[in-house]
Amino acid sequence: MDASHEAARGLTDIEGFLYWEAHHRSARRRAADFVARVSGLSEKQKAEIEWWYVQEQLCVCRSMRQHITDHITAVEEHHAQRYSQLRRGAYAASTLLTTLMLALCVVVILGTAG
Image: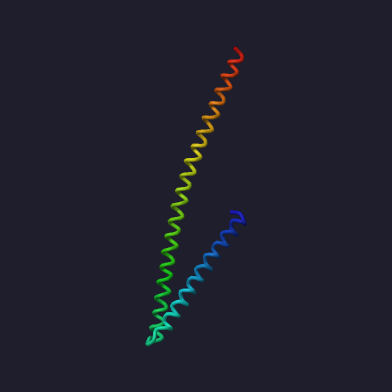
C-alpha cells in the first residue's frame, strides 16, 4: 500500500470520525434543548432522557449508515457485472471484426493473384 493510498484512507477515517462526533454533539444538544423545555423533571430524569435520546439517535445513525453501505455495495456489484458484460461484448465484437477484416484481406489477395 503506497503512502497516497494510506493518506486517503486516513483522511476518510478522520472525516468519518468528525461526522460521527458532529452527529453525537447535535443529538446531545437537541436532547438538552428538549429537557430544558419540560418542567417538573428532576436532574436525574433529565439526564436519563438525554442519555436515552442520544443513544436512540446513534442507533438510528448506525442503521442508516448500514443501509447506505448495503445499497452502495449492491450498486457497485451491479455496475461491476454490467461492465463485465459490456467488456465481453466489446471483445467479441472486436474479435469478429478482426476475423472479418482478415477474411476480406485473404479474399482480396487471392482474387488479385488468380
